[in-house]
Image 1 (spheres, rainbow, N blue to C red):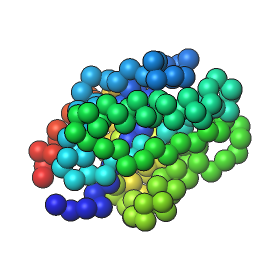
Image 2: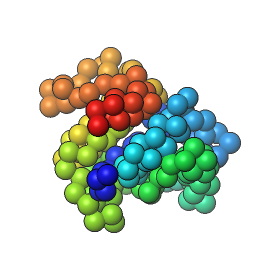
Image 3: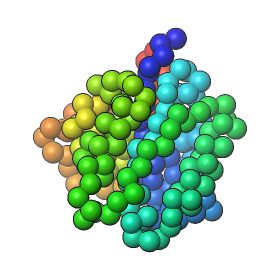
Image 4: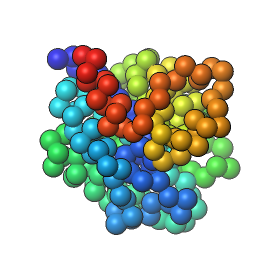
Length: 184
């Protein structure tokens, strides 16, 4: 089994249901059917799973980093109960106008993952549901993957830029995981 197999996942709209009102507590975090099991199956197959998520609700004062930690603990506990593991949650706490380098579509979060895990992210699958996820993946040298959950259907319907035109598209994270594991 190869170690150093890495998969980067966006959170809202990929792992759990998205909300325009923000996910502010563990109680509001509703896993998309099959997503927890998908993470566990990829983890069991030797993939290191990390989450890269914009969380501007912190900058907006809607929740704090303790609430965010509880949400991530909630997700992690479910994945562990299913037999898997998430290696880390990486997040941008800034708002859209904060001029940071970590807010997707910029590649800062992905670069942070590479630094902290001491791995190359070249061609690593980055699964997201929004154009900014795909752009962050592309600019960091990852393989952008679009799922149609969350904002994914609207993202696909709006059309992707030419540089992302050949992005693989899956109905959901479970379908991506099945295709990935079937290809091994």
